[in-house]
Image (cartoon, rainbow, N blue to C red):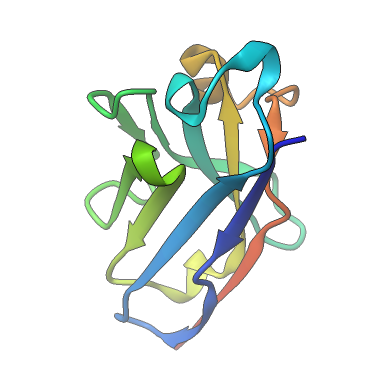
Length: 131
């Protein structure tokens, strides 16, 4: 069973930076696939708000997507040989406070559509930005 684990969250001040990591561990992905076969997405959810897709990256890393709220401030990347995806977050704002999740799916479009049935989800990491 593959697991995704986020790390790198914490309490920072407005204007600071954080880099979140999403590491995949376990035996094998579905149907013998590997991490490099999967598109990755970063999401967040704040109390009382809907889950929001922040950024997505395809299997090779040559296609990325950013939500309007983070465009120009956040950067998604991946290191397939390390089975890890990253979210570099700069110029953080108090409104960025939320639990941040990573997700993986073989279908990049499904990630872009933020479909509920994405194949793998992490448990989340808290990011708190103070003013």
